[in-house]
Length: 559
Figure 1: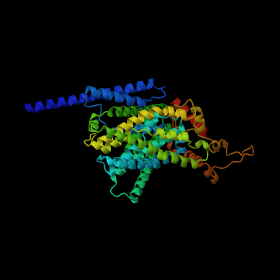
Figure 2 (figure 1 turned 30 degrees about the horizontal axis):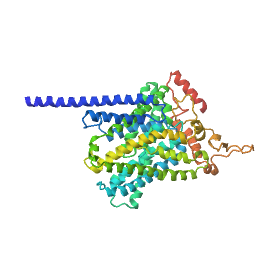
Figure 3 (figure 1 turned 60 degrees about the horizontal axis):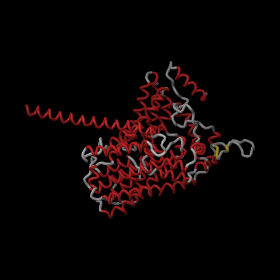
Figure 4 (figure 1 turned 60 degrees about the vertical axis):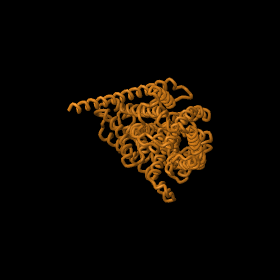
């Protein structure tokens, strides 16, 4: 009995010590997060630095400090977890991007985004995989064909989180919508390719396997998008019908946050792309749900989603910086530093070539079908798109850990070399490419005011906190079908004004995206908004003067 009591006391002491260590680690990590935010604020006006690079550098410095005080045993406070990244950190980032994105600019370039995100990722995947086979097969790293294809999927993944930190959608709306939109589709495509590499029989690759892969991606993209739209519409319908804000704004905010997260988890439950689902759920919620809540809830949700996304981004970059010095992995490659440097340089070069292999050809194809010069992607913009998409981040890290480690640990030299090379590429691409992106955009692109007039038709108002970058401005028909500054509703050279109806075949062929926009707006106003709410169909909490005045002011244009 005494022995058992002693054992229990000893076990309790071990658990208590373990809990205390966790508390210390979390406290230090939260302190570092606060430090990243403060330093990032002080460097906000810098033309070189941004908060992601600041967090990476602080993470590396912290890793060096921990490595020194631990006697070379460890360099990080927390162990990298794929579940932590994919289930808790990535969803708020992608959702907020969809919630805040300028929908008009995004859908105007939807076909180009799909070309870059799907077809472009496939081209990059093929180039990197073939390059890995050519250069690494001779090195005896102990890799199979599945590992080489996994490398292609890992390094074809553009990190949309990095894009958010570098580009600004107000200064460069076209570039932002193209690069970030491509990043969202790219992440989903890379995950599909990565899973396909692990699930398909790669011993006999033929045309049927390739067709099955294409069909799998088409199914994944369609079902994931539909699930996100349905979840967003469900949240709008529930809030519109139940008038949650009439009793408590907390319930409105809670149901929006939970429904957004539910969309991601449902996608994972059904083996779909949670990235695509939560992104389109954010777009639908910004178009319908957000206008159905009270004014206080609008301000609260806008800042809550932005804050969660911001903290998650800083968390990811801080941890990637700390994990870069993981002594366990570097110990395996210490005997062959030349091999590690060669692999890292080769992967970086393949990443550069793989992205160039689709950005410039697909931009050329996209320009062929665009009539207006203002909508075409010129060479300077193509260079910027190529450069801004070179950064690799936590998505590549998570996929590399999944392929080449077991529970975060590896005992094989070849796997350790690829893990350390992935870390090297992520750090180099973020620090070097990230540092040079802002100056490159300012050098290659015209001034932000001229650029906004040239490629953006968004209307900016002082009440931006009420419509947070949602692009809800409704063009008139004359503006919607204007081409090259001339309205198609009036004849040129001062002739008689004749109406060219937007449902004509000529107009559909001349401006297809504007014609689709016209019909979508009519369908949205006639069927969708009366059912799911939205701008102009906003319920208000009875007895609330603020809500009643807001409701009446928004209802006036509909009368």
